[in-house]
Length: 65
View 1 (cartoon, rainbow, N blue to C red):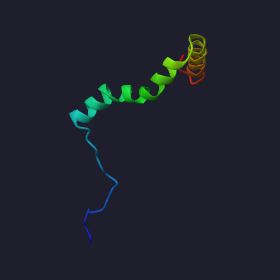
View 2 (view 1 turned 45 degrees about the vertical axis):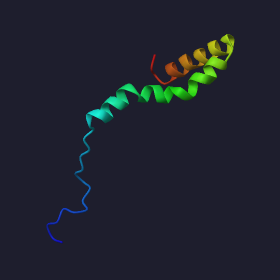
View 3 (view 1 turned 135 degrees about the vertical axis):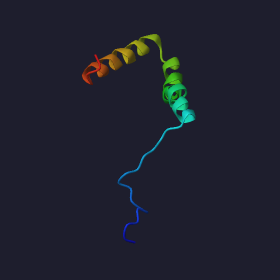
View 4 (view 1 turned 90 degrees about the vertical axis):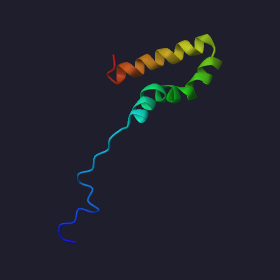
């Protein structure tokens, strides 16, 4: 198989189509948040405050001031 490029993966290129790009931009953020919405709604106001304070602390610790 001299000179054959079949099976070589060292120069692959993946092109994202418009429907995929749109899905990632428009739907994916909502889907990743979905598991958190119901528990946050069930939490009491004081619990939600503690959660958000903790998230702000985590953001600071990760360098996302």
